[in-house]
Image 1 (cartoon, rainbow over the protein chains, first blue to last red):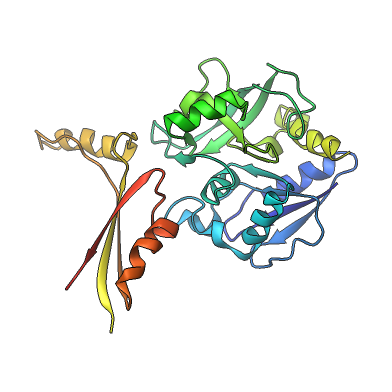
Image 2: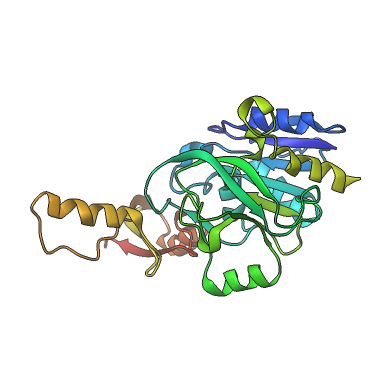
Amino acid sequence: MKFGVVRFPGSCDEVDAVLACERVPGGSAQILWHGDPDLHGIEAVVVPGGFSYGDYLRVGAIARFSPVMESVIRFAREGGLVLGICNGFQVLCEAGLLPGALLPNIERRFVCRQVNVEVVRAGKPFTGDCADGEVLSIPVKHTTGRYYAPPDVLGSLEARGQILLRYAQDGNPNGSSNDIAGVSNADGNVFGLMPHPEHAVDPLTGSVDGLKIFTSMVHAHG
Amino acid sequence: MSTRARVLVRPKAGILDPQGVAVERALPALGFEGVSNVHVGRLIELDIEDPSQLAAMCEKLLANPLIEDFEIVSEP
């Protein structure tokens, strides 16, 4: 599977995302420059973490209108797999590809630590290599990670099984509604999460649990 | 001919605003008592030729209507 990893001015996790994609047997990755609307024949998109366009105005607000994102939005609407991590999650929410929004952390502080997230729903295409209820150890690092959606939207996300990851056992680091760490769109082909699976792919950094998200995507692709 | 306009963007009522909370807690520490209901938003000032575009601009970019309310103040 050929991954395309978006690079905005201010992205900082795109290189780790490329390395994570390349760790999966059958995975390869290339950078997609924000100013280039051509997706170069990639088969899945990763919108990485960072501070796209300096997070000016509002996180993800300006990145959402970049030339590459117009193509990513079209790709997603045609059923293409799109993974948004941290700032990428914020961008996908601003783009309307995912429900809700990310607000400043409840404690008003930058959080940077390893968290346990529970796989609420294992299944293709993003959590197919996990088991229901499995706990993954993955780091978070963000200031604006409090997931918010209006109560009726939250209810529908729960009912439709769109909440794929939750912070486990009182480990909610940011005040997210319903302990939500990652949600998908209704069609299941777009997934956003605040934790950084691309930073948990090597035993050297303490956990390889994040790799499961990337292997799941490759295996879903067949 | 341009008009000077201001757009005020506020966190929506009912959504916790940690910046407002931080300011509200800081004021009494400086001796300013009796302050409540503090919210911190954004002020965007711009010169615009066609102020009728402002609402669409706010809906699309300047505010996120899911989490923020906006108010347009045009100068005569």
